[in-house]
Each structure stands twice: as C-alpha cells, then as structure tokens.
Length: 560
Image (cartoon, rainbow, N blue to C red; front, side, top):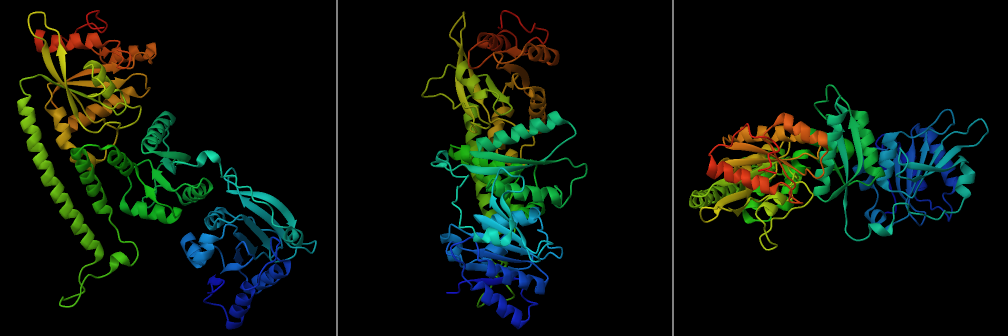
C-alpha cells in the first residue's frame, strides 16, 4: 500500500522535481513535532518551485500527503489523503512551508484557515522558506480553537529549529465535554440578511432560531450581512461566505440555514462556497412539519409538500445522475437518471393528489353530518396558544386532550371537539370547535397547497376566533400575517379577535389591542381567566343574536 500521496500542482513538475518530492514524502519524522533536516529540504524545494508546500503527518510521523501549491477545495484535499489515515489516525499534523522572499512568516488568511480546519489536524506548523535577517527561519505553531476568530490559537512562535525540537505536546481537546455524550444535537449556522430596521431583523432572527429549536437542532453561530442589492448568485458576498465557512469549521456545524427561500442555483453556489449542506427557511418548515405530522392524513400532506418543493430542485450530482439509461434494443442515448427520478416523483405526486381527493370527499361527508351544529375554528399564528385554548374551553381530559407545547407548530392535524354551553330554557347548546394548524409569515406555497384540504375546516367555519399572543411584542404583525393568509384562502367567515396570555402582558399591550380592535376578547388559556366571557360571547353570538354588536364594550362584566 502506498504510504503517501503527492498531489496539487504536479502537472508542470519536471521528472527530477517529482522524484525529489516523492523521496521527501517518504521520510519519517521522529518522536518530535517534526524533523528540522526534513523541513530544511522542504524549504529548499519551495524556493526552487516558487510555491508553497504542505505536509500532512500522521501519529507515527509518516507523511500521508504532500500538497504542491496553495490549499484548494476541501473535498480534493481529503480525497488525496489515504482512507486509512483519515479514519484511523487521531493525531494528524499539518506542516506548511510558505514561499516568502522576505523571510518573514506569512499570516494565513481565512481561506487557508478553512481548508486547514477541514483536515482536522491537532497542530499546524507554518514556517517561511527563507531565513530572516537573523539567519533563522520564522515559524509559528497553532492549534484549533473555536474561541478564536480565525479558528486557530497561537501556541508558540520563533525559531523553526527550536519549535521542531520540542516533544509532541499533550493534547487537551477543548471540544470534549462529558455533557455532550448521549443524544446527538445537530449544530446549525444561520445566514441572515439584516435590514435597516433593527427591530425587524431581531424579530426575524428570533423566529428563525425558534424554528431551529423546534426542529431539534442548536444554533451555534449567526452570520449577518446588510446588503441593499443582494448578489443574485449567492445573496451574500464572497467575503461574508468565507466568514461563514470559517465559522462552520470553528463550531463544527453540520448544516447552514438561510433566513429566506433560495433558488436551486443559489443553493448550489452557496454550498460550493461553504463546502457544507445548505437549507433555506421553507425547507426547514417542511422538515418540522414532517417531524410533527402524526396522522396518516398529515403525513400524506407533508410528503406531497416536500415532493412539490424538491421537484424543481432535483439536480444531478456527479456522474451518477448523468448516466444514460439506454441499453440493448434501444435507440439513441436513452434518458438520464435525473429524468427517471423526476418522472418517479411526478408519479408519486399524482398518487398523493388522488389520495387527497378521497380525503376531501370524506371530510365533506363528515362536515355535512355536523352541519346542524354551529362551527368555530381557532386560527392564529403558530405558538399563540390555540391548542391550550381548545383544551381549556372544552375542559378536555387527558384521554382527549390536544397536544400543547411551547414550540412552533406543536400540532399540525386539525382537531374538532364538542363544546356545551348552558341553556336555561332547555338542553345545553352544542358547538363544534376546531383547532387548526398555526400560520407563519412567508409560509411555503407547496405547504399551503398540500394542506388546503385541512384548511377547508377553517373556510367552512361559521366563526373564526383569531387568537393573538399579546405578550409577544410582534403580535400586531402576526395578526396582519394571519389576516393576509385567510384572505388569500378566500375565507369569508366572521372573525373575532381573542387576546390570549393577558397574565403575561403589560398594560400598554392591552391598550394597543383596544385601539386596534375595540371588541376584542381578553383571556388566559392556561389560567382560565376570561373563558367565561368567551363562552357568554359565543352564546350571545349564535343564540341571542346572529351577529355580535361591534359596539359592545371591551371590558363588559358579562364577558370577562
């Protein structure tokens, strides 16, 4: 088996130069950081070639890779290192000899830092190929450190001979922690475009971080850039993407999430620049829906939304998708694997649409059977307390209680429960109350189309209770988003504003609601405050008068 691999800019090398570099890569370093005579010969080759050389040493001091020229794309570097060295060696050292006419140490830039971190060395020794004014070669020894801006911490600098003669220092892995054992949590880096409105930027970032938490991941870093005219190819500039790539390595992030929907070309360009998987906001929401869908109907709708989203983004990777599917007995080159996959997805979408038609028919029958009862739909932004309101309003027990968590999109499936209101002149009046899926700004269009069968419960309701969380400073913007989505769905039902979480809200928030909607109802779904007023309102709306008076006082004792 070949011990080392010579790669990089080797095409222009003369045979004698190639042989010298190969012999140099076969030299074994002793029990010190590196053998100075070998590095002196390495510096001599750098001066002759007028370009940098990089050596990757394993824990036994064997050179596994000798790279000619500047470091390039991480994939090419890692593929050049023998498989056994990448997977078995846990003590890799990177040694870089820079071509420097002045004899001073060249400080590596962000690009070098990124590529060096991908090799995952325990140490990185950088030195100049020429002697300085004192007759020595300047050198510096670094170790990976996520707390540093460039991802590297300087251990020692000075004479190359002195650094090489030091024994291998003991490794203290700063990243290891006993608390990290157990459940694996995916680390995510966020790419954000900031606005001139700082509050809007913070609001959007907080919502994106909430989506990441709901998906079960952890945000480790945020890269933000303010651009008046985003780059159509990558949105973010080249320098900002380099900073993001460096932070991906610093914090060992496995995924990058953008705060907006990206085109397929933009995703490919950003992934190429970061050398890391990239997901946009819409795909993140679809992923959350896929995790949360519990019923067969919900899973079917989520699968349809995901396929519709991915179909235009299905691109070939490497030669696998470009292979021709022709064979004996066929004419022409045949069809590509990519075309086969597109056709398979299209067939699956067609089957899912037929299944949704059947579900729609079943829902229509069920809805007809319930038509003799007044129907109410609880709608609103995600995580405003809709499910908690249904549980408290209908006094649901553990057996028929709806899941309610302090997370975005905790419930996806529509749930209908019966509400009985006391009637002095006869049997109790009966209502049907439906909890619907939460809304969010810029809800992905494939998701809206897929969940249209579910959202029909909202469209067919006699009354919509628009729940807002007035303890959230952005409740007014969330309310506007809900109104816009309802209008786009063609909802014509009467809408009644319900201000939830009054036990957490400030006085000025209550006054703001009063100025926007004087007939709003106030309650706390968790503590039960105001539920009696809501029940009185429903009884008055459906059985006393068919249309609730818009001039009713906001804090009437009959309703609070």
